[in-house]
View (tube, rainbow, N blue to C red):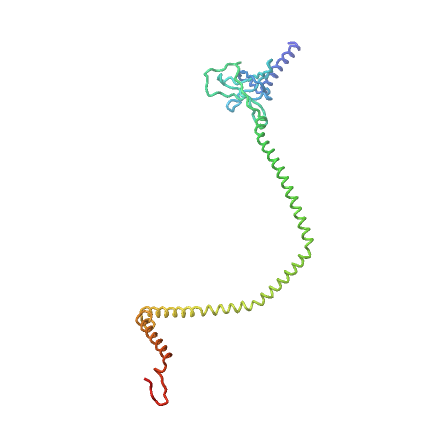
Length: 298
């Protein structure tokens, strides 16, 4: 074998190894059989070759190739393991794979199966989830509106606070001026108040013996009060008994109160006595007569 032939064989072998190694590093799984499917999108949102193809949470392949077509649509070639049979209603959903925004294709099977299986080289139905940036933007829009409203309210509140502080400062200045102008009167009032307090202290000292005596008197009243109440109770009991006897007609007062004849006789006696006195005043000679000769007038 010539030297040139050996170099040619080595170069071909190196190219083959390079090709298979490159595809292996891309995740194409050259050693395993793969089916190739296609999907068409309006915008792949940063999808690149070798991004994963996911089926029910399991990576079953990768993005093989991305091509911009004449109608400005984007053709995406997917490399999927041959052992996975896909229904014709399977959808290739372009979606974000994480918070960092990495893209991938998720194979989603519809609930209704047609029973027909896709073949190598067929085109899948395509769908595209909303970009995470757009989702965050839409979610942030109401929050931004609320923040704007809050800022407006805060500005209005800040103005009110400034006005309140200005009014408070003016009131404080006016109070300082009043205190300055009336300092002499305040000093005099404070002095009078101190004198009054001293007089009250002196008066309280004077009243202390009175309070002590009042305590002693209260103690005496406390000791004598039960006996006094007992005597008053006995007096009331006797009065009740006397009134009861009077009501029953016992005794002179009882007979006088309850017997009409005694009252009538007494009244008649008074009338007779009154008539006697009148007659005595008008005709005294009938009852008393003095004569020098001892002769009595008939």
